[in-house]
Amino acid sequence: MEWGGLPTLHVRHARTPTPPLGYHFRVTQTPQSPSEPTLRRTPLHAAHLRAGARMVSFGGWDMPVQYAGLKAEHDAVRTAAGMFDVSHMGEFRVTGPGALAFLQGVTTNDVSKLRPGRAHYNWLPGEAGGLIDDIYIYMVAPDEYLLVVNAGNIDKDWAHLQKHRAGHDLTLTNESGQWALLAVQGPKTLELLQPFSDTDLAAKKKNAYFAAKLFGFDVMLARTGYTGEDGFEVFVGASEAEALWDKLIAIGIVPAGLGARDTLRLEAGFPLYGHEFSDTIHPLSSSYTWVVKDKEHLGRAHITAAPLQKLIGLKLERVPVREGYPVYADGVQVGVVTSGSSSPTLGHPIAMALVDAAHAEAGSFEVEVRGRRHAAERIGLPFYRGA
Image (cartoon, rainbow, N blue to C red):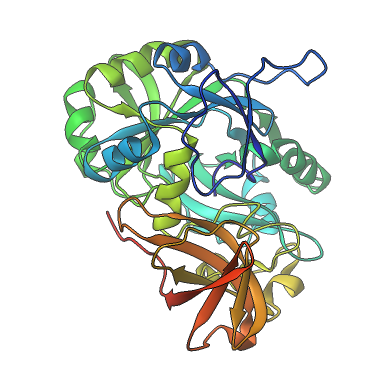
């Protein structure tokens, strides 16, 4: 779900960085122009600079795209543990006796199945098709929920929820500025964090959400993530984020940037809002039909209609492909690439593409790259299956 869409990234660094292959980069060698909007900073901005991060303009935020290098950071998450600053994500709290009914009406998944200390993935459907956003909902306590929304959609989601809250006895609070959010991911995450927590982390199942101490800091932990590996997302007060970040680096957790986050989620087959989901893409083009439960909710007629497109996975031998590249079957264009990169784990290019449903089962595909078509093999998603 994470980040919101992927706008053009503007690199503001004296050296040209190695580009994450899933991104479109426009490199700038000059400081931010006085005429440009001021970029927002997460509470960890100074920590990123100390760690030597290459910073980029990302959806209005000054964010790290990489530190030591994309492949090193990607590999750290796949083999040990890496850490991402996702504090630009939004957090909304919904409390009150009308909270459940409200959330049931504006989402597709069944919020009534949640219990305190549990979380799930969910969608905010549009009134006339597509998605407003894909989100995570955490049940904090009876009549209390925390919503985590994509960074690029905070204002849109807030307006949407405000519009549909009428008639519900609840309080809706935007807490986005109060929290820092760290995603610690990788097969050694549990081993590294456990000595510094007062909680039996191994006893917590996937999608658990709970209060804990971590290095003496009061945090909320969620066993969730966006990389295809095990790990925890750490909610900590904004004023304590930098100190906690330094503690985590000191025990060997590798800082990782937006570049590695993109290649990791692509390998895991995770859709990204603005690429595989949007206001205009039918969400059931993806394989996430399980997110839509049999209940009354906003936009139900549009969500349950048969999609005209299908999201597929493609493997290529040598040529990396990018978002927007045309996809062909039997000599006819049938769709476009939505996300593409060279896979650091698998050692070859991979892509997700939206294609006409009638051609989704074609025997072979081609992707056009700079005027030349290259053979692509359809393979099932995810490309990589970890934890």
